[in-house]
Image (cartoon, rainbow, N blue to C red; front, top):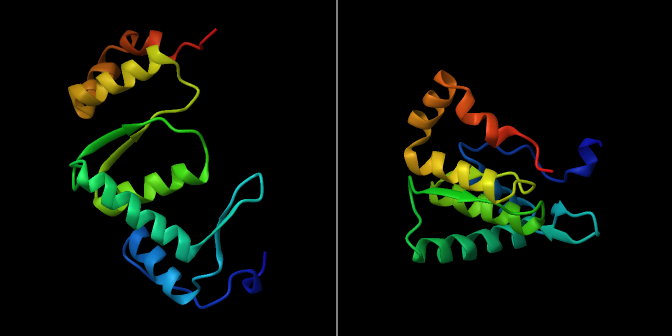
Length: 137
């Protein structure tokens, strides 16, 4: 790709949210995301989707510092959820979509217990993660 592939000037921002907002203002119709099927989402539309999703999540009580574990497939909608959570200042704990209920339950339990305490315990007692990390057959 060349600089011609990205219209506009280089933008500076302190956060991802600020960067998307600035890019949506500078080049609203430029493509932000293109999925495997060819679906496109412009910066303007991406920003609009983030705002609506963030408003919905906020109405459900999610905000600054809220821990949110999520397990979603790799799609444009997942990027929108991630960006909306980032806009709200939520702490995200993405869980790999290939995980089944056992692994997902363990990951959520670690989050509920408090990430620092759970991870320190797992490092101190590695056998506690042995069942979690084993492949699903």
